[in-house]
Image 1 (cartoon, rainbow, N blue to C red):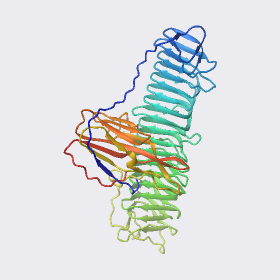
Image 2: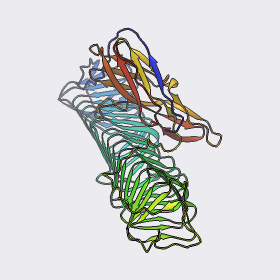
Image 3: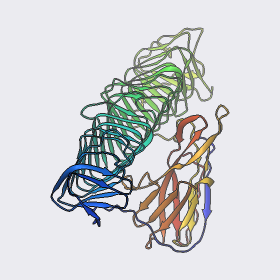
Image 4: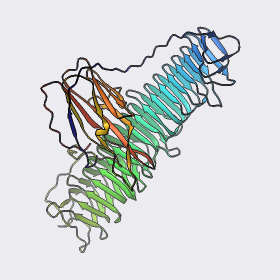
Length: 582
């Protein structure tokens, strides 16, 4: 978060109230029916409920809006063909075989048993699955898909569709989520997209707090919207991170068997925990591309900046085979350790090294611009080309450059006498930092133009419901290119500070066992915390995240997680809170 962060403290006293818990029922319901299946064709009208209590039935069906079909446990129904509408509700507790081709279908399918289909096309309604579901071809437009058990999809094309997975969802043969919508893979859930065959395009918001496997995300625009990873995400074989993508990793993100992770347009990648790129490079190929590292980033190949205006910001640890700046700027407050060459080529290329910055490698070449402070450690050939600039920002706090295989008394093996380094010394000794010894102390950086978010602290005298208005704690980013930013209250989500496995993380309804429930009204930005009845003294800690957008720019820029602390009970003094960057 930028320097405009502020902190607010509120102390209130109020009265006791109860708590709220979240649960999902998965038992097959009992449904009262008005009609039974008979003959070879059935038309279900509004207000009618056709039931199949046992045995098998196969035939044609028309299902009008307001009509319901109920299939009891042990019963099997096959919809052989449809003439006319199919816009009502089906509740399946047995076995359902159904194919829906052609026209838009505003049906609501609720499956507790087994549902199989060769194809469901142009669904505009919804599917809720508590059982086992398999669809050979699946296309939607504005639909809703919720899975609580086992779902297997083939040849998937989703238009502006919301998907929420709470258990196991696999898709093969192509997965294309386009024109908005959301994919939400919940805590402890597993989602696999084209792990066996097919390509992937994600022009939709992706929220992952479980485990998500994505293969060949290089179709069309590849990944081109907001992606928030709070769980385990693996992307295999090929990927494009394109213009409107904002990729945030708060847990484990791996790119596997990909020659180059290509960042195009104004794509943003922010790593706050662990990022692994195996068998390949990461390349910033456009002027607006930005890679921010606040955690541990391991790249088996090279880190490359290939375009003026691209930016890498490192606040913690980076480890790679090599580092190349062909254009662009690297701002380093952390450790950059390469096993090969660190190369800054051409004056449009620049390294700004901070006091805590440590850059380490084998060989070094600079024909660009290096400024700032900190330390450089190299063991091989070091070349300061005559066209370059190597200038520390302070004579009293110079850059320390140590060549372990020094040529004579020179700082660099190769340099031009009429272009010496400025405010730069070679110390007598230097201990090379590694990823274990280096301590990441700088505050987190955030890619793009996030809102300012303040820490929330409230102290109450009793365990009464308490309200927090995010409008009092969130400020939009200052205007960029005369375009003002607006906070998107409906983007706010809540997290358990201590428990990454809390199944209500990354929602607007956070339940913390034995503490209480935080409920966020995404229309107003008001969070209501209702303590559990037995929580009368102590502390509860949550976090919130929220985004802002600018007019004409579809990309949402999220904040980092920001703490909410509530202390209940008399005798507590308010903590001393310093201004923190979140």
